[in-house]
Image (cartoon, rainbow, N blue to C red; front, side, top):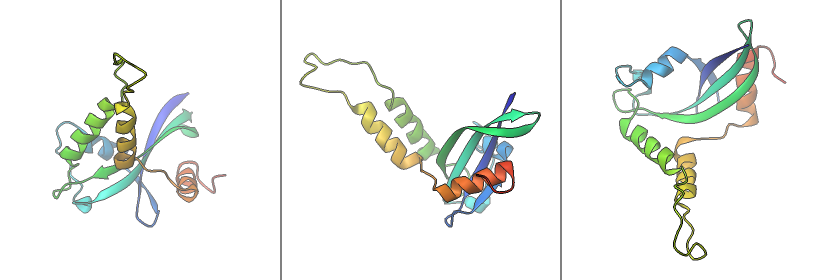
Length: 143
């Protein structure tokens, strides 16, 4: 058994198109040299799928990540959005801090950070979009 990955971009009309995993990784690289001029200034929905592979063929979806790619005017990933996303990800970790009077104060910072992160950087695909992704991965009509 192996593990594979696929990336799909989802348009405004819920059309699902496969996107190069290599290009996706290059867009996220530290060098920030990769551009996607066709997406300049846009916010694009994506689904990254982690797959169980047997003999080089996908047999099961292990995990889905549904997020947004925010592009700057040059078609590079927006670094300000990237820094904000990392800040929220760190803030989502519960600190373990305990107040002197725990009954009077609850540290909910991590909960608010998770809510903000989900609102800004995640989305939930419809059943129709999930079906299209399944069909693109497994072929034919996905059940």
